[in-house]
Length: 256
Image 1 (cartoon, rainbow, N blue to C red):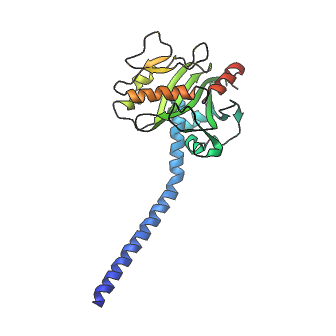
Image 2: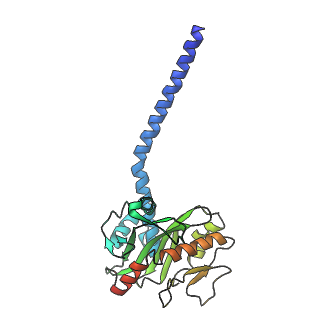
Image 3: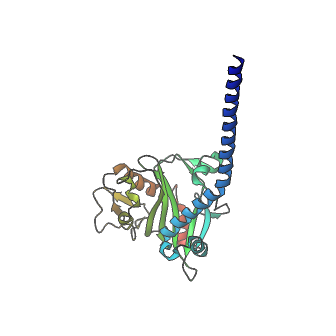
């Protein structure tokens, strides 16, 4: 009997020791991998911004060098439209939105995000001569299954679309995930966000946009809810609770 208890005790002790060692190894690995994960996330972000600005092909394999040479990230206050000081590298809209001191509760939550950060980071993309020719604006909003995030590249008039690039989503392959399809992305260049009265008119059109529709892009076939989510996201972020104040101000004064 005593021998059995001793054997059982040793077994339990061995199991506990293994658990402790495994936990320590997992913790150690997580700590060691965190800088790499952070670097990979930043590289992916820079890649998407270059794609949104039309510079990804030019960058080739040297994404970081091209980004640093042509892109300037600046933080803005969404309510005033002014540039403000802030950590543009580690900025996280969703993290900020969970902090009541750094965000607002949305009354008209068109994008389905509940709260919106008071600030955002915009990306000013220069050409070889140093003139800003593209402004890349991050967007986030509800799709069918979860939030979808991406970037909209605008020409220097801050109205003409250069690209719409989604970077993170959980939509259904072959349906909502068609936001990643190059054919669909190729429909965006030249579309207009606003009409002459300054109203947000950009939208996805079920059944396909007409050839002369400067605001409409073909909806995603078989993915009505995702298409509605894209439309709502764009109309929110380019409206008064999104980038409208920034765009209005710097269309008038010029982005510097």
